[in-house]
Length: 322
Image (cartoon, rainbow, N blue to C red; front, side, top):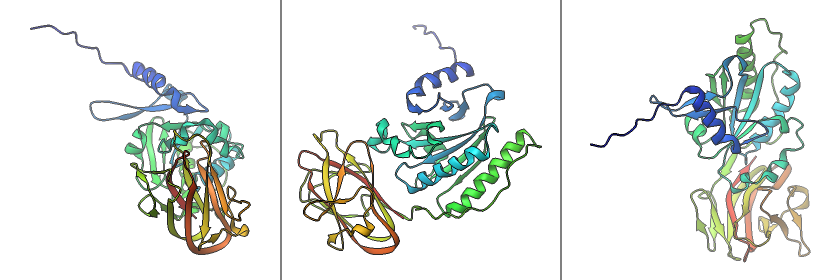
C-alpha cells in the first residue's frame, strides 16, 4: 500500500489570503473586503481584516439592469454625507449575468453619482453570494457586523418603505458598536423616480424570425426578427448587447402601436432616423438602453425590429418596465 502525505488544513489567515488573491480581479474601487470560504459545516462568509478593524458592511445584491440599482446608489449618495466617518461601508454586488458587465466602460453610466467611485463593487462570478444570501426574483440587502449576519431582507417592494427600514437597521447596527453614538434623525422617503414594476424575460415576449435560445438570453442576426409585448407604464429599458462575433454596432428600431415612438416619450437612447423610424444603436458597452420615458402612464404594444443585424448579431436579455 502506497503512503500518501495528508495535506495540512489551511489556517483562517491562510484562507483569508487565498480569498484575497483569488477574488481581487472581481472587486472594483476596493481591495477584497470579504468572501465565502468552504468549511465542513458549509460555506461561511469571512471578512478579510482583523475583527477590530472590520467596518460594518451594508451589502446590496443587485441586478445591474434594474431601475432599483439607480435608486440604491442615489440613497448611498445621500447617506455618504449623513453618515460620514461612522465606521460603515456600503458594498454593491452584481452577479455577472450580462456580458457587458465585464467591460469597465459600462460602469460609466453611474458617473453622475458623486459617491459611485467610492462604493466597493463585487462582481460575483459564480453567483455564490446570491445563492447563499440572495433571491432569485428580487434584490436583497444584508448587514455584516463584526463578521456576523445581523439583518437580511428583500428591498424591491415599496422601495421608500424599505429604504427607511434599512436606515433604521443602520442606526441599530452602529449603536451596537457605540451605544451613545449621535446619529441623524430618521424620516420617511418619497420615491418619485422610476422603480421596477415588471421584468419581461425571454419567455414573456412574442418572438418572430430566427432566434437562438440561451439560458437567459436570445441571439439573432435575422433581419426579419422581432420581439413584441404589451407595455403599461411610464418607462421602458432594453437590456441587450452585441454578440462577440459582431463586427460593428447594430441598429434596431422600435414601434409603439405599430407607429414610431413619439418624440415626447422617446427614451434617451432612442432617436429618429431619416426615414422617421425610432432607432436605438446597440454597442458593446452601454448594455442598458432607455426606450420610453413618459411623464404620464401610457399603454400600448411595443415591437422591437432587428432589421439591421446581419453580421452584427444582438444578444437580448430582458426588458424593465417602470
